[in-house]
Image 1 (cartoon, each protein chain N blue to C red):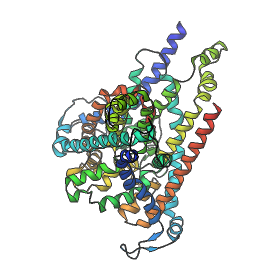
Image 2 (image 1 turned 90 degrees about the horizontal axis):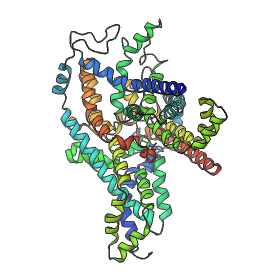
Image 3 (image 1 turned 180 degrees about the vertical axis):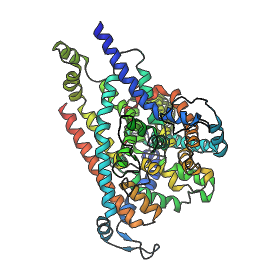
Image 4 (image 1 turned 30 degrees about the vertical axis):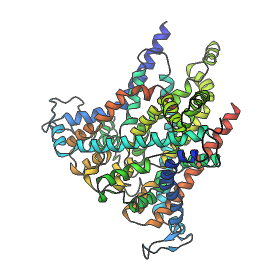
Length: 281
Length: 290
């Protein structure tokens, strides 16, 4: 019995330390952001709990940075990236899971081979193509959004995930629907899609997180500040507030509030082991 | 059942994905290779075929070598810890103790936060008069220029990558640990094995394919490291954190040197291809054995 308590104690201590380390960078940012002008942020020894916490840095950062605009941009880009991924992946996955046609294996191999092509190695030609198609913000805001969304509108990982999900749907259901006179498109829409909803949720959530955090591509294509997504806008804080760490910290904390809320609301999808399919290079 | 759709139907379903994959994967892939054999230096609108001269230039460039070596140093710093530490955390979490899932949520949290914010947070921790140096001085060490000293900058970047990745790989390990048969642990208990020995003789061999997966996946993402470096050091000090992707970025988007950027991209493609092939062979081999 005693042994069990010792074991429980050591497990909890280890995990409490790990959790604290995991939270510490954010706690330290919050602490810095809450310290007013008359509190030294370089104080030795460092103080985690501010003596007279103030929201003035948050207010100042909020006034100087159009966070709502950045939220909106990030949201539009992430939402449409998710929608296109869901539609395109589940469309392409259907014949790959269920139909027989010429070149099926070749096509499937081509799709899977793109997993091995890192975006970083092809981003230069992608940029040239996006320029050629006028999908940049100098051709208007809508085109700017397209340029942020289209290169990530579909990926092999999503197609593969949906194909695996379709393979688990019993064939008899489709046959019955077909005999009842259901068209092939309706079989896909009314039988396969509803039956694979959990997989689509996983795909949607991981695509959303990926798109929301994407930094490299937006920082390459965006020239117009009114189209900045959150990561690009937050990186910009460093230059705007030069070395004013109170404001940089406050701005960084404001920027992560939406994704933290999203994460807490969706936590069962993240930590229930459903993410095993989400292995992505 | 085979004939309930017309012959062209499968292609219709594949069409949207085909268009986007062609535009944003296949064409850029071949264009990268094509560009790497072209010379743009005289006239950017009329490139001439250059054979392997871009590659010759690339491999005679000290800067590219530095970037290549830095990338592998980064990989060696990050990958071993990213393969082992999340496994240890996962083993601790994979127990039937009340309230254990709150730890899962807290340790996973950095994964969902944008790398830019994580990098800014660490930049603040690493500051010359920052909290990390305070603790060093507390234990009578000299303060370190975490991001300004060429000996430490890459290590500091690797720490950020490790921090951001622990939760992600922990979840992969957790889903693998569920598959380890409980009877094996009971047998080890009867033999009087210590917890450490139990995991080394039961857990590790059983999830070896997943460990291999984590090693290759984290290696591939280490080869692609960019955002941390862009936010924290911009490749400095003195190129000590310049990696392949950062080199490509600079060549392509700051110096507009398409040929060199493309040649470096092909090198990156090849290196990642090698890792992917190792991944496939490792996996298939293990799968047949188990």
